Image 1: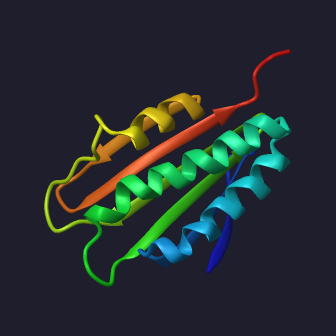
Image 2: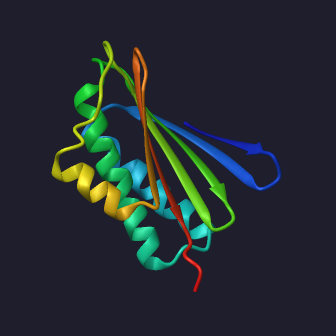
Length: 132
């Protein structure tokens, strides 16, 4: 289900919830690419963000509890898209920051942030339009 919401005057928020299964990650990649085009990002930036969302999900899914959803919150602003992806966990969890997925994620996104709570793991990626 997708829920639009207005935050302030400059940012729109869209929330998507899917099963925490690799089969549904493509839905979030497609949503990210579609919304990134609304932010006036370049074709290369859109592709980078699409792949960054994929890598963030790859880092999250191993920590998801059984039958839990994969939540995504897209914040669409002028020249920037922020994507917060999260899953419920059975305890404190941290993504593998030494692996290939983390390296790729850091190279593709303008910013990456991790929030590892007691029972929820969130990875936020942002992509900003670079000044030309």
